[in-house]
Amino acid sequence: MLFKEGYFDSMGFIMLLSFIDEEFGVKVHDDELIEENFESISAISDFITRKLN
Image (cartoon, rainbow, N blue to C red; front, top):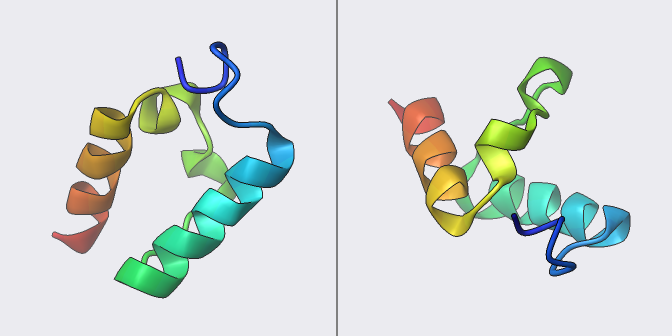
């Protein structure tokens, strides 16, 4: 939804991944770059929570 509605473009997504790494110490691997993990704020939050546990 975030991409489809135009809130993020490819550069914004790179910045988001960098923020997640810097703020939470969460590395996002290529196989995790799927729409379900980043389609909404809630999905991103759930993804980070799963990675931290």
